Length: 111
Length: 114
Image 1 (cartoon, rainbow over the protein chains, first blue to last red):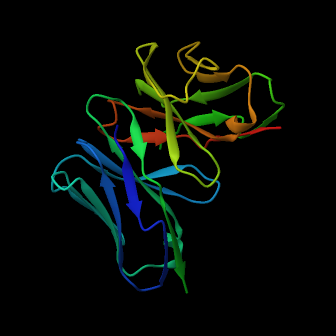
Image 2 (cartoon, rainbow over the protein chains, first blue to last red):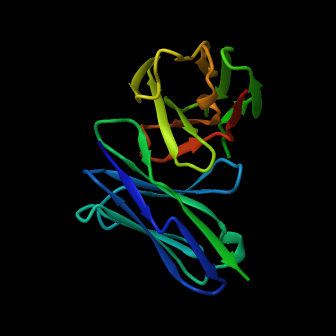
């Protein structure tokens, strides 16, 4: 059974700082997704990573995938308050049509 | 940008009652899903639906749950006899090609069982 773990679970960081959220998954997965969720809201798609070595960037966020290490990272550069939210990674397996979500990382960016 | 629409946004029901949660997936999407999120916890897969049948379901999706695509646009989740532990946010999602281009989630229905 595919298990997905994120760390840290909670991250408080100052504006302007850099940090990385880690997402490990337990068995082979062919795709990895990152989502953002604001309190009480839906899941907003951030990145779809389809292959080993994939790197995608949007604004201050950059995501990467290493399928050999079963690891994806979400790097935050020069954080701003608007990035405060919960970030989820989710792994997809080739034989199933479902996503298995990580535990989520609650990011709080302080002024 | 195309959206997945869910109704109602919030439903309160008494324990033992039946509820139907409704979703309108993106029109050219072929794969449909239901997920749930208990308050403060991670998102859990319930069921996937393709070509008018269930393609996979989780252990959570027991006999109390059912899904249906009654017409060309709606996708529904029915809970026959609600329990207190069914209280959660339920998200509908759809994808074009099994998720290769991503999954689009609806805004969710908050179900409260009292």
